[in-house]
Image 1 (cartoon, rainbow, N blue to C red):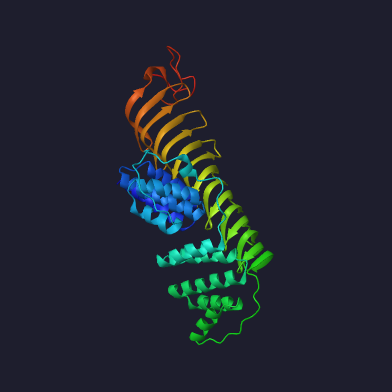
Image 2: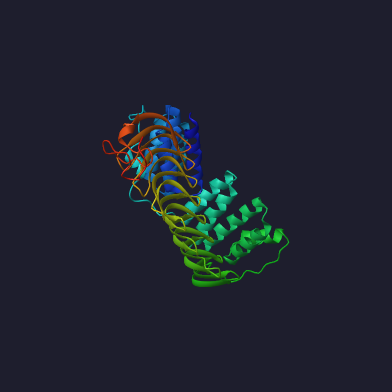
Length: 398
């Protein structure tokens, strides 16, 4: 089992537990390509099946679990029985690769219901993942329609707050559940020595709300007093964000602006994450982001005309990429932390080519090069036969 495979599996599971299902599938499908044994493949496909089940895509989840079971994964057999009441007898694996249907899922994904969130939250509580359970229960509250649904979700969230030692929040949720006629919540409050008279419940969801802070104003949708849905925050310091929010953080599509920067694209948990376009004092970047940094594949155009297109890692040029200077010089090859390190090729405007191994932006070991006498050593311009000076930069020849 390679280190990269283990890292991808861990990352995919983390995305799944935080409901970033598209990200989880992308990472786990990459992991499938690195599997070396049937055991590894079965574990990976099992997790892909779990992602589809949590998305509400029952049909694709079953297909994945069948494939995982065929690879010898016992958890998949148990999952099929417990979740779908299916007794499955494994068969010999027919293919070495996962099908495109299993990769993408069916076109029609069932809308997640209140009870789906409650069920997932229960699993998370059993796993002692209390923070994610609270997020899940908050989602359940947001889509609740009946008094019973509100009461159950608030009561369960109160229980989780007890586990986290957040007693003030626990009491607040018990009181809200009691407002929705939950007798167990009233009893819980009484056991805490708190006397409470239920009140008429008010909706935690507000449209076109307005909240004024010391540093700015928010106008838009709110949930439990937090920015949630669509809205705009305008700061007194000139900063602004307009777009989608989730429990007080930018989440979804949105545009951020300040005096030096503008970002238009995807957000997750208050950070640029996904596809987006960022303009700042240096230039314009368009491509992939992760946790607020350029990460993945993207293109940056500097104000001086330099262009880089290729791989990024945590905000730096790392991986494979192509860099073009305004004079037409092009480097294509390996990068490490913004430096040309590894194998690459430089093509100069006059046609001169240098190819080989680079260290700290310099060619240290050539494996191919055009004849030196035909090109200027300074600018790479092609020289006329018998020339004493370069016609491109004026450099003396010889």
